[in-house]
Amino acid sequence: MIGRLKAFFKQFWDFGPRQNFKLGLYGPPNSGKTTLANKICLDWLGQEMGTTSAIPHETREINVKDQITIKGKTGKELMFNLVDTPGIATKIDYEDFMKAGMSAGKAKKRAREATKGVIESIKWLDQVDTVLVVLDCTEDPYSQVNVTIIGNLAARNIPVLIVANKIDLKKASLRKVQSAFPQYEVFGISAKYGKNMDEFYEKLFELAAK
Amino acid sequence: MVTLHFVPYTEIEPLSGVGRIRKLLSIAKENKIVLLQGRLRQEEETELIKTTMEEINKEFKGIELAVINPSETAKDGLQKLKYDVLGYLFGDTQGLTIIGPSSIVKKIKNDPGQIELLTSELRQSKASVTHSRSNSEVRQIKSGASKVQEAARKKRK
Image (cartoon, rainbow over all chains, first blue to last red; front, side, top):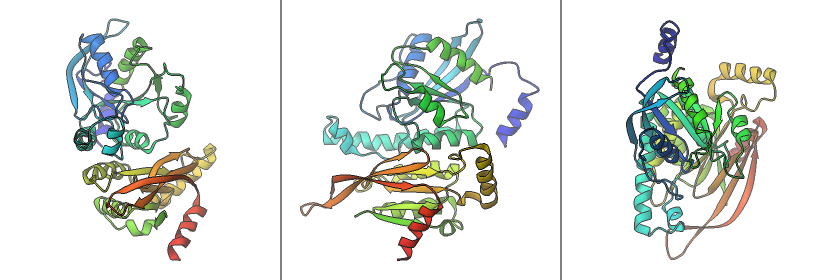
């Protein structure tokens, strides 16, 4: 209802992209959310936001970086608060962390924190204004977690851009992500190597204007 | 042995959102694969993930989840319209939801017209109560009403 009212009034008072909104990074574990957050922060603040790891669920708490200002090609500025969220999963097994080389104690602690992280991510869906759904485009995009996150954002009328990350990898398939979510715009990047980042920042202006 | 538990939509229809989630999760926690006729609402699906996380412990490691929505698998606009109208008339009874405990279902591949379940058999160790995984096998469940009926027949037996 609030979303519909916002959309109604927006047609009369639309003066360009919103400012100072909460931009959430959502997606499954290990899709590169924190790598993207780090790249954005490094490009515009000169410092990284969080640590990354090949072991899933490295980010287990919500991290917010306030007042990031980016500049577009035309000189326009966009200010937002970046919200990096723990990856959403339907299962967490501490034995998987042990297989990655962790001790039983550390693995159990990580699993406990990871479950809390997923709950926090879901709670934060109420607080974000715009979302980048970060997907690993070397993985199967038809996972129910992806569908549930995107469906939930659509039900809340939250503007979404699907970021197909890791396009630098051989197995990457942007087309597969596009065919899984044909009603959404999908943009391919490599957050790790900074590929397509200039065009990505321009997309943020378009997303903020929605 | 893998047990499939069919839940007709009429069984969850009168329940509240929380009640539906509790019912489905309690079946999954009995190491059974739930085949639900129809779908949960968007917010219920998210709540299902949240509740699953709250209930994870030594024995229960989570779930694998997949939903087949006939409207999304429609081959053309006319077929999509047909399913959308049916969805409008019959609510969330269209489609199929699969919820499997992750101790049994290793992975669900939703492609999106058919669903593949990669299961692990459970073997109970004499020395401990914990389960160990062995003999992975692939089972396929194709979408469509006939498969729902098949599961219903199994339940009646």
